[in-house]
Image 1: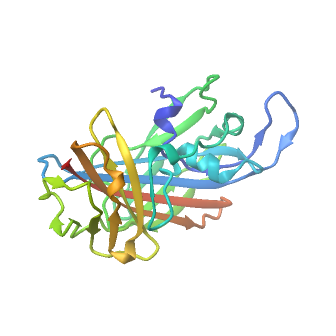
Image 2 (image 1 turned 90 degrees about the vertical axis):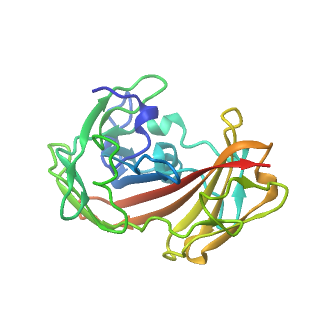
Length: 287
């Protein structure tokens, strides 16, 4: 199966050693890992929650800006500081193409991910570089969008068998719980047919871990798309959506995300980052 970079840049595992294009000069590299797991549920819908995971191994130059490169490669949405909001016009671009052009995904062998007692085999996908999509190599994804293999609130194991490009590795990490007791303007989330955009809107949830964030996406009609995003400390259990965020009257949605980013130690790598993003969405009408 052959995929292109826009579909693959969402989820990665980073690793090392690369040479500059058109040169025999060896470029110093560092080894980093990134695993991304997402779960999404729609309040009031008959469909079950969905889940997706993505992993890969990529060579990156040591001097490349890691923050910009990770952001472009799917580290996650650009978020404001806790307690602040951001509109789409305030978001920033990621790494320059020159940095991505010196990166390559590596073969990790068989890659298993999921609950530590029952990991599932991820599917490898190959894609080739192009002038506009310079990344190439192998990445690994969930074989379907089932949420059962990607539970919330449990211990995860990522395990690879390795290859001639990369030794095998094991990574264990704890996933956060899904969001509970979410309320908008004092009413249970999902039972709020209308949101009054002419005033600030209070939102609450059952407070979680101090290391996590809760961010709220405000989405308008199909034509208007994303109206903005606000970030809050999960442990606060509350926040405020400002009245200027909602735009014109009409149908839209609110999506609450619990975000956990964990830096982990893996003996065969220089660093590793695991990212969990669990979302709860409901349709609303702005007025």
